[in-house]
Amino acid sequence: MNEPFETSLEKYAELAVREGMNVQPGQRVFVRATRGEPDLAHRVARAAYRAGASLVDVLWEDDALDLIRVQEATCESLDLWSDAYARAFNGAAERNDAFLLIHAPDSELFAKVDAARADAFRKARLRAVRAMLQSQSRNEFQWSVCRVPNAEWAARVYPDAENAREKLWDAIFEMCRVNTSDPNAAWRAHTATLRKRSIALTAKQYDALHYKSPVTDFTLGLPRGHIWFGGSSTTPRGITFSANIPTEEVFTLPHRERADGYVTMTRPLSINGVLIQNFSLTFENGRITRVDASNGQDVLKKLIASDEGAARLGEVALVPASNPIARMNTIFYDGLYDENAASHIAIGRAYRFTLQGGTQMSDEKFRAAGGNDSIIHEDTMLGSGEMDIDGICEDGTREPVMRAGEWAFEV
Image (cartoon, rainbow, N blue to C red; front, side, top):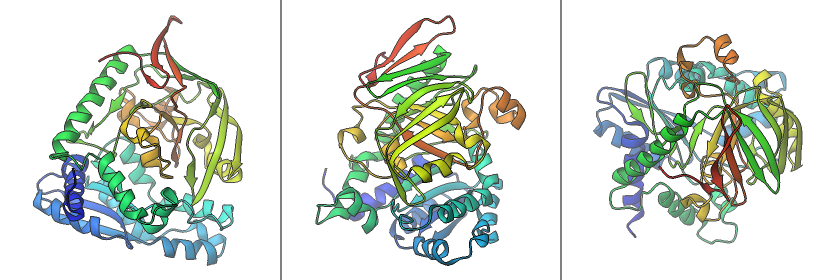
């Protein structure tokens, strides 16, 4: 379906407002956007007001200023963060605003900067918005994330294309089902299928998952009372929203102390503007004990040393290898798209809503039940067309969950 770019962009904005955030009449909306790519934020604001938003508050970020700070500020000052920035994020979360996090990725922003400086900058930002992140892990407000292409990102994804940015926009519209006659209806039908899959997996209550491929042999325990999610989530006030646009995953939390074996990642990971490629992780008793990477190994080691929970896992997600994003056969160098192209595990913070009663638990009880907490949450992709996954029941029997990267059961 070919249509003018402006029409597709309007549909993308409407999808973010209506299906992503699901803005309610009278609700405030908080948007993080990139100063260099304002068009989507402007259209989101218009769509949000049409949906009844009382106020759309846009916080503009600037990658160029971030790079200047990491390059020029004193090392000691990199632990600081803007009070206004922290108040904006944490205050919006406390009010239960609807959040939209728009980003224009540059996977090599900090590639030529000392890794320790970039790491200090990253951790300062995360500490500043810790209250928001804790609320987000409980789904206390609607939130969604989406992307806009900038020239740097587009050139990274399509280095030989003269019209790289246009090509990336086309890919985004396709992945998000914007190029259908009714994107909102297509989105709802898709997320309904993901919810059916998540309901079936929750009912199984597997004790563990076993991953096996030519480059991976990994057993991941699941806590009792884990809940699989897919497609959409619901706030305590009963408002349904879609956190990721696009999404192809069903996910839950693993047990923080029950990960053993080795995994080889099938897609790169960008951390602090440094691309981590060809990397593997080894686990013992839930903890990462070894990291190997062809490049960016030091950056990855710093990531898993961010805090006590950063060397453990907070999410496990299953994605069929034949999904529409994977079929594009493209590395997008961005977690939102690459994680939805392959099954993955996330280092760091677990989402508390993925454990029965988890949103009401104290930190101590959540940890005792197997949940992990950290300032970080980084998805790492291990899925492929060669991956088999078994569900291990409490009595030790096994059931096929995935074979050759595809679902092995019907819903």
